[in-house]
Image (tube, rainbow, N blue to C red):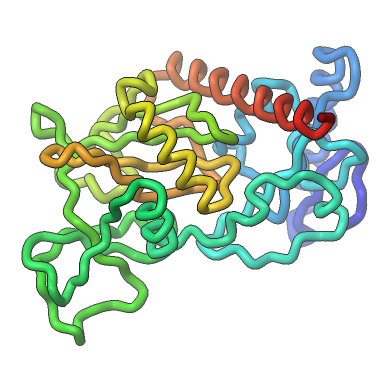
Length: 300
């Protein structure tokens, strides 16, 4: 990759006007960030994908007035493998390997991989044998961000079983009013600085759509021991930065992490604007502290 000391790498097929505008906006931001910091702003280098403006990482860097780039830098604060694939196999460039890389070994976030790690971390999973299980179960794609879950009745015939799907318990994540809800946990290097509660209807419970979303305290979502187990789960998956979808079953009280996304968008669009701003500030503060702690550890 050719170095751009003050720019970003853009696809060659992108129209020339769009390329010029993106480079101009990036340089203007670098200038304003340098004025804010009194020197060149810290750089966060990502590869192989460049985060959308809607991504949480982009918003955190803007909040901190840090540069987010996919071009080589001499002394980046951190490098992050940012690859929006369920199974990640893009070779990393030699210059990237010279630095500490977050999510470098988080290469497989299939539902079956998550299931095995979940059992290791929590002591329970959510998988069922669809040919043996009697009752309602959920079938969904192995692959990330499909939001294609649906409830079916088991058992099913062996011929009906899909090799590209997983079969799970029908977790009844309902509140006292009978509304379905998810927790979305923001995970940054051993910390959970932000938790959203997303309220859903029965019709949209398996999708990414929700009726409303709220920023809540972590203690109102999960217990300290569940925090420890979640950290253990992330360590098992080699994730340094990700957002997790979690469900709590109303009858058993058990927590289930059903999805891990190392390239998250956010905060949720249904979150009130003032809470969106607060969430970005909280994430940015935790992100900055994690990098500071990492730097301190490397000096010791």
